[in-house]
Length: 576
Image (tube, rainbow, N blue to C red; front, side, top):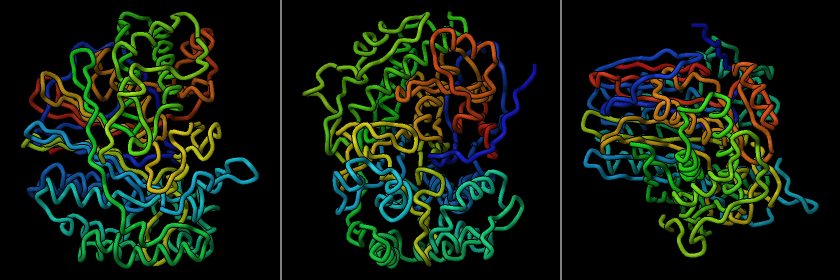
């Protein structure tokens, strides 16, 4: 079998993908379909970690070996990635953490960033039009970070270790430095002109002559090490109510920002009710709004349930999936927002609504989607107002799926001087003005408009799959809105086509987000298949890669665990 060669040439603009650990699940679906490519899988009898960086993988595995549980290991991986993969995630950003506890209960921790209190509906409008430069780079681009609050809450409520135990090894790594890999070197080079605009970022990520660190060179971050040690000594209060909050307010006042120490002091996580829905013979647990990911992964799969995907030839199957993506993303643009501020209809994940959407799909031709749908009971039945990727499970049966981010590469490009903390640019995930596209080309409506204290819409899609009431898969992805399509494709490959994770993860990907009206495909997709999709009316846009996914599951014999790090990135899966 000829394998496609995947390379990671450019940074993934979007979400930081974290570790995947699994210790308890049932066997995957049987009989794999013919495949085009495969990835390297790791196996272990006691546990499994897969992440985008070998150092983070090792950190999570070490915590498990030292008696920590899945929640502890998750936080250790997250904090380590904040050092070695800070272009994608860190404590200056946010996260969604989905936990299925050993007793079967589910906890959804919303550590998403929020708009500062001084943010306004028209804050990013200049000369009558939304200015995305303001929401993407610099002092106005950041929401109030939530990741650290989520990590501390998770460890205190469900872990065995202290936050101090988990953050000090990462502090030591920041102090002594780490060897820059090809991915990180490429990310630095891509962002160097914007990083150079800010003194704090220049001091951390650029050499005195303005050049970036090359592959194999050592990057040391003593300021971040000091920040981590401050948190180790005082907990998250050091960050939200102490020196870091003071430093943020001081820098923002000098540079035209609006975030204050009070914004940090007033930040709180939200505990949400997970989205739980059947798909084929399985049950999916995903994240609710303000994640659009869980809702629209569910909506797309609900639409696909009307079709026997395995019976289709490959061009028809891919066409149907792309049409389902298009319908769901049209709904995303209109309906989705922070449920504490707007009504997000539960009808979006209604099976009958999905069946009605499925009937709009023409098997032979691409169909224009002119507007959003109208889900049942949209006025009265909405998601409740209570308020990177890494997935973890332990021998006791605790599972975690968590996605974290600073949004685009190196977030706002701002590092608060003296702290080493990269600040996010999540304000760009709001609809700065209806119809104005953000960095990822997504458009939104008033449901996702800027408001003080509001959480911006996200595509993060941490997902856990059960069969017969037992966990069998944990997965998630990085890559902005393509996270949704990546998770859908991985699930279809495994649950519908019976592919093992190492095969499912390596198949050429595609993505349609309604606006712009184009179907993105990876260049590894065979030319004949691309031609077949184009013949059905799809406007193809060929890309090097589409996102990064991590998958874990139980081997077919049920005796071991399998972990797969996406071959498109420089990660590693390792079991014990």
